[in-house]
Image (cartoon, rainbow, N blue to C red):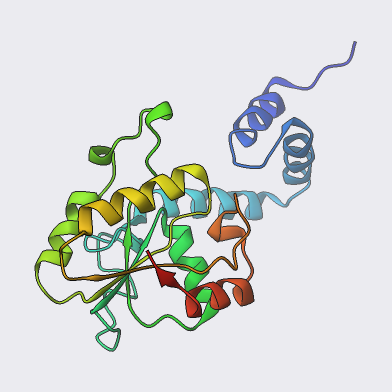
Length: 200
């Protein structure tokens, strides 16, 4: 029986570790990469290495940044620092930015509460969020966690933690389908959800 060369099998196995890439898609990608010019394969490898070594978390909000510097939002002095949008991951912030309506700042939690999976409040950047709110500059916190059981649990936990803080707490409107992920939503849906956010 004809099998795949080991080098190709190794490549396919690595590609299946990418989100949304199953064995068949990994095979197609691996075979496609074999047809690339050597210079392009080298360029791809260098791009991977550079991204892995240079892309970091913003030290202020946790969004994607480069070389340990501030992200573009935190570095922008024209953004409204009194409004803080709390998201689960950096791609959620990227998705909201595509809508073009939000002019505040972000805070990335680094996930959502999930006791079943062992993700507890101390595993997220909730303490850093409370420190940012404690400086008195934040007047509104928009909870933009995903419309999933874990996202809802996280939103409820944040409501309890911020109760009595004097900060207005809102939640994205239900323009997002239940169980959806922010980074897969289209810009118009996100813009509507942001504009029609509700009290939490």
